[in-house]
Amino acid sequence: MLVGLGKYATNGSPPLLRVLLDSFLVTGSLALISLAYGGMFGGADTALALVAVSVLYALAVELGAGAPSLSRLLWTWALSVLAFLLLGALIGYIAHLRRDVFFTWAMLVPFLVYGGRVVLPFAAPRIPEVDAHRTAVLVGLSPLGRSLGEQFDAISRLGRKVVGLFDDRSKERLGAPDASLQGRLADLPQFVKENGVGAVFIALPNLSQARLLTLLDELRDTTASIYLVLDIFHGDLIQARLDVINGILLLAVCESPHHGASGRVKRLFDTTLAFTILVLTCPVMLAIAVGVRCSSPGAIIFRQRRYGLDGQEITVYKFRTMRVMEDGADIPQARKNDPRITKFGALLRRTSLDELPQLINVLQGRMSIVGPRPHAAAHNEMYRKLIKGYMVRHKVKPGITGLAQVSGCRGETDSVEKMQKRIEYDLAYLRDWSLALDLKIIFRTVGVLLKRDENAH
Image (cartoon, rainbow, N blue to C red):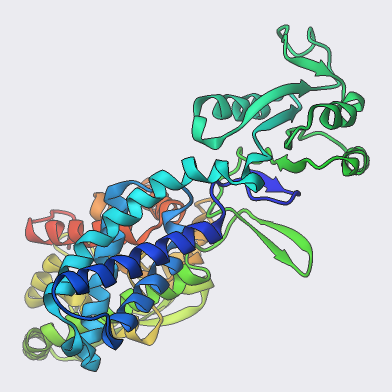
């Protein structure tokens, strides 16, 4: 991980250029398509362009710098268009759009944005402020430093050429002679000045704070940008990122993937989809309610305390499938041929229809459509003591479905090993989250429900 202490970012093209290019492609293509279909670029088109630009800006973190994979961009854009259509239908805005213009534009935009992201990294180095980084030096021939140098050599579009290596250790001590070793740390400032080096990458994990501050002070007489290469990858990083609070640099090593704009986009996706499914399944839910009432005496809705975002206790709703309403300190998990489950309840559990009331939890903001499945509070207290990192799964809202459930970890966890496997998938979801991943999990969930799952009971 790089921490920039200089003037420019290290992640490719400047963010402003990406935003301006996306805005130009979105607005320009909509205007041209409107003219091609014999119309004018009107107020409805302007509003549509503003919404699209806002969506692409909000998804900038997910799409990243440079060119994202085309499939990932298509998934993300398809989700955005779907959300726009649903909201537009609800507020009546969609009636003001010309369908031929909208659908032609919607199909064209992701390919235009993708093409722009491909071209921009090659065009941006021609801009003087980016060109200043064409040459670089590495300080510290640690494995991480060597790996960074290899990345510069392998990925030509990074625009870096390493012209020198510096380390206080001798060539023999480093393990193998290296012809590129220019000298010791004391020689670095003079070399940077004389050779017009654009960037200095410091990869010395054992460097003392005093020595580091001295080195940074000596480099102040140069125009080079300075970056610290943090050697913390032995840990399990969850959404690692940098932040600044009133000039104080912070490194997040365990953070929710749904912070900032990503969280707002996911919340929009959740509420839109949850509301739509609730409307479509109202007749089904009424029929289930009647079936639960007739199957055995008791409440139709089962409420249970579970842990939600940041480990806060929430109440989760389900259709009752058992003859009991357990919510105490000791709750046996449902198992195959469990005598507590009614016949109608077994059908609901097998098809996961008992989970439908959790759509209300989603609208309340307590749950998400996709996320780690919430466990009963009693089970949480037990497993947090047995499984390292168990509570990290609560950095996001629990979900109605999740990566673990579509990866074969559905049903009873009658051993610590089974729960450990489920947690591994939950943490992988936190590390790799994207709206595209959410969509894949939703479609895979449909596939799981359509085939009989022996673990569902």
